[in-house]
Each structure stands twice: as structure tokens, then as C-alpha cells.
Amino acid sequence: LLGLFAAALDRHEAMQRTRLERFFPPASGLRYQNGCCILPAPSPVVRQLLRRKFALLPQSAQTDACRRLGSWYERTGEYLTAAEFFRQAGDWDGLLRTAAADCGKSIGGEHRQMLLFWCRGCPEDALRRHPDAVCVLMRKLFSFREIPELMRLRAILLDALQPGGAFP
Image (cartoon, rainbow, N blue to C red; front, side):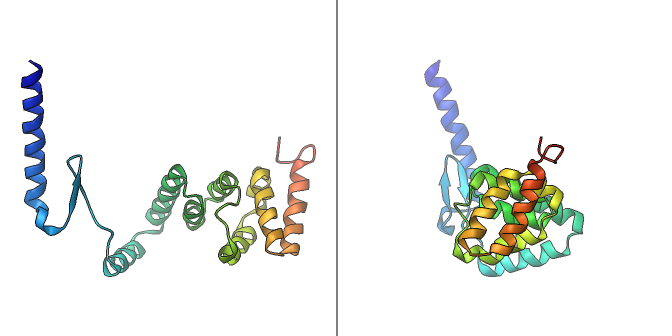
């Protein structure tokens, strides 16, 4: 009985492989793994086409797509990319959540302007709700010698930590 089951499973996998190969023949250079076709990365021309098509979507669809991409990147541990997608979606809570989870490890010197844009663009009420992220941002601002912005975030953090502040 076990032999019959194994033979049926082998036939099923062969049929699946045949279906895939009909659309993506092995000569096309595509690889297969566990019966799934692994597609190569899109070319720059395809990327540009996708960006143009994305720009034609309604704003609500773009926002939803950016939020979903941010959530996916957050789950995979790519916090910097997730934070940038959350910023594009206007989801400041998501951005601050990923900044806190990353602890500033992904933010290097090349991300200085992006960090400043985040700090200046983020609403104060969102900053008050995420004091852990504010601490991470303040540490990175200190590293970048952005003392005036650091002091502004410090005031928000101290205000949020007061009794009756936004932080419980």
C-alpha cells in the first residue's frame, strides 16, 4: 500500500512538473525547486514598467500596497525597507514600530537624510506613543551630530513620560 501511495505521489509530481514545463520549459533558464518555478529578478525595463503602472493606481490602492509591503518586510526582518514603505503609506506607527525593532542597526551614515526626514515628518502624537523608537532615533541623531533635532525629540519624549502623558 505504501508503494502504491509513493507511485501515485511520483505521478502527481511528474504531472505538475509537466504542466510547469509547458509554460516555462527548462531551456528557458528557469529553475525549479520542490515543483515550483523560481523566477529570476525582473530586468530594469520591467521594473520601470511596474513603477509606471503603480503610479497609475488610485492613491488608496498605492497606500494599501505600501502598507502591505511594509508589513511583509517587517515580518522578514528587513526593517529599514519596511520603515520606508510604512513612510510612503503614511503609517507612522508602523515606521516607529520597525525603527524600535531594528534598534538602529540598519541605519548607517548613508541614511542620514532619510532619518532626518522621518523625524521631521512624523507627527508628535505618534512619537509620544512610541518612546522606545524615539530613544533609537535620538541615539542615531546623536551619532549624526544632529543635536537640534535630538533636543526636539528629547522634549517630546520627556513630555510623553510625564504623568498624564501619552505613554502609560
